Image (cartoon, rainbow over all chains, first blue to last red):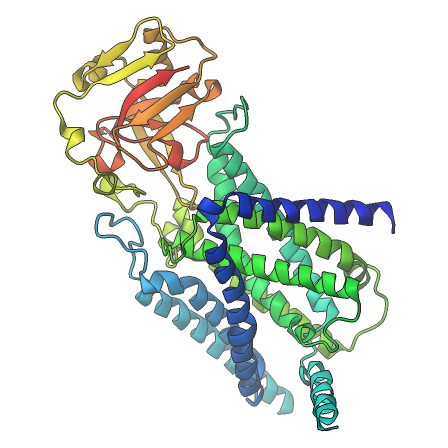
Length: 136
Length: 386
């Protein structure tokens, strides 16, 4: 094993140990059980729910005649929806502070998704026109 | 007999799983490219996160410089907006390597088992940091832990596991990205570029629709940002309202005095009108929140160093600014010498010429350059020198 490798393992291992030690020592604040539920829950939700759904969507889109623009459009739309979801749900709104989450996020997300749909549709039309010109 | 037959069928089934992922994008080349991008963005997030942590909890007598004025605003903007932009990269990377989750046998040796355990830590910590981070900036506190503590310690876990992962995979990254010579079919190249382009577009649009919460010229595009830098009392966002701090009545008390005590030559007790009679200065400074948003305003009030001189405070003293707020983790903050000696650091009485709104800290609040918003103490009633 060369020096760089050992140094990397040493540094990485030390950081992992520091992280675990901090989570345990600071238990009053980090609530290790609650932390572990979130840590494990997110892995399960991602590997067991989100990715299988994405794979199913991928299979469905693959049956289309011109899948790539749709695939790209759906990917971007899904990611932006995920990022916007907590704001759309408005969980963090507070009556005493109107500067928190001040916008109509449901409407804004629809605007964003509309733009993505528009660009996707235009791309599909362009791809088709190019295809027919080539054939003609 | 039947047991071994069942076992054999399960084995055959499991061995076949990875082969069922037919997309050419589940490749080492794509994983290497996305891994490189992720390595860079996690490094930026770790560095800016540590910067923010140690700015709020400086070890020993360490004193941060008060300039450049907007440094914290930039580092924390990078941390939060960059963190949001990392979400698409992370999801794409995990999708690319998903078939490896189903490799059979799951563990070929002890070292392989340790390697996979550390990958599990890396995946879990990455998802934890991104998703709880996203929820936290959206004020959705759906957990039993303290977010700053959990986010801080999990960062070490993530970065440690990342360093080990990079050591293990570095040869592949080099081979795939720099030293590769074989010729690929044109279609494979197009498909890969399209995929990486899509991921980059998702990241770019995430930035485009959120960065306006800290970069005001783009605030009109901040459709998916939890804040607008122009929305709030006096056109400025608020983190903790006067009502939430439980100070609505006490800040209106006519007996209010700002006291300067501790290691001073002359202790002071100044009424609001006394403060208005002291030399007033106007500065343009941002409030830069740890949640990534920032907003600039014109603040007027008295220089903290003028007040300290009036009370006869030694130039190397540490000042503690205390709020009328009874509890809460941020009811007081320390102001170390570089900050309180800076002429831009004020005990502000006004925003854009008007007295502070209760939510912005009436009667008096601290405002200093290059400093996290949570340390810009509001409803100030006491300055203690030590």
